[in-house]
Length: 256
Image (cartoon, rainbow, N blue to C red; front, side):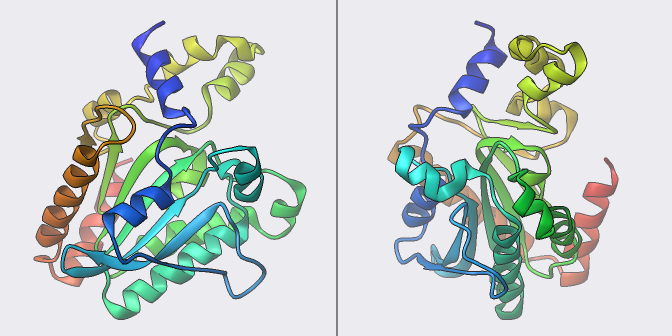
């Protein structure tokens, strides 16, 4: 097994911590908020408020399930448009009250079902990209498993984009890439190597800003390390004026 194939397997491992697990450990007083105020409460997107250190933050994440029943409720971590609209509602709320935002990303992609398309999946993702680019609060996105396609990017227009060491970030799944390029989804491992989807490769290309070291999928050391780095980075980002913050974020993504 190649190193890329190993990372791909570990990124998808069901024993990984979920976004809700991280939120509850990063913020001991985390309070989840629900609904998009338009259609429904999407279980694939979680969000809420809590204290990171001494400061209030908003945490938003894409939630996978831990078993079959939970995965059915979470739609296997594939958000509907109402999920992205819930996320945007919470981000605008964070902007109103001056709270920094942490997004936790783990999805194979947005849900491609007919109902999601009828309710404006593409518009919901595009709206998040547009609005996040101009939010006047610091944003840090952390990929904690899979970062798949526009479904992941809809929460990743951030001042800093971080990845856990054994996670992936890609425009589509390696299986999808192989099916399109070679008409053979079984060549996913080969496709993954061509796609440059690992944290180290993406850091070298400048797509992400930082890698969080992993030693197993869950340990107090990883969580404590992530919390400390988030607090430190938000302290630095808060030194910028709001105009400087938005301008730097804009130029960061214009480079691509």
